[in-house]
Length: 389
Image (cartoon, rainbow, N blue to C red; front, side):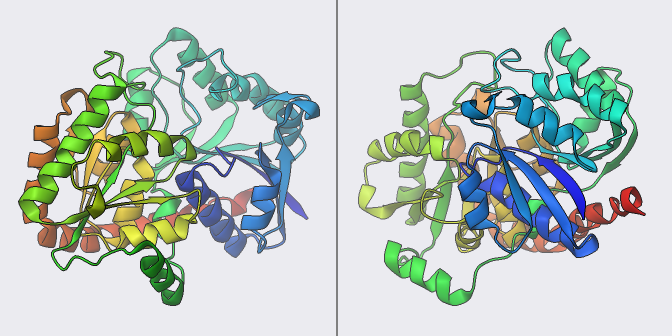
């Protein structure tokens, strides 16, 4: 049986990462049946419970296994005792480079040359790269690329980083994020959730919001305090509810974002018109389907934008890191973004009201553009067949 190691943020804490893994497992299994997937994770039981249809073998990254997250024997063995390594999502950036609890590039760069020495091909699959801001990050990324056989990125921004840093790169293709092919759950399940959470009761419509706990982590200026950030988001939600007479749902797709979401909601005047839907309770397919029911969504987390695109829901991206801006450009929505450095309640609310007015044409535009991106994402799996011929 062939063995493929899948490297990603596969702890179960992030609905976007689970969407990548779930769609990857389906796509690759369609073209390469009878495959065992080695998946390094801090939550082995979560993966067993959520992906029982596939032959997933979780590789524990807990300290008693000799590991500090991705740094240690389990990761080394997973990368070198396999037939193929897939590096997914946004693992390759250089912030907090020397902190193995946060950074993946440092450990992957350490082990990648051993893959090359042992003849194990590496494929960057469904990746966004960056930010790469420091010489040590550039050197580490080049070590990974030197051991890589194929790069399939989901955005043009990654290619621009390679070009700006003058990095040597193997065969490269721009495809699309495989989470775009997330399929909604059965309609009966969606109706259960809507009834339980009392969603979509306002005939005027519902607007989605999403925030994350990094606040200004990805931007160097220290633009906002936590208090100021929450006030800006809450102020925008209040203005949108007042001016458009809509309800609001805050979508949480990463467990660490739940607290700051609650802090934002606590500052909203009309809290009775606000709901919170979180991945602590709902699967990624369910969150994506609910995003398909809102009229418009404003999100910081890239995968809330990707779920919207999958469901043809108009979106406004609050762009605080490269992959969000890159994704919006990929689906022709770069005009609908609010740079994090410019975020205010007035600016976000004004942008949302403009997007609301244009939502019908935006929905039609997404319906026209997204199917080809979905097909690109599906095609990526077929590129792996050459490694097993």
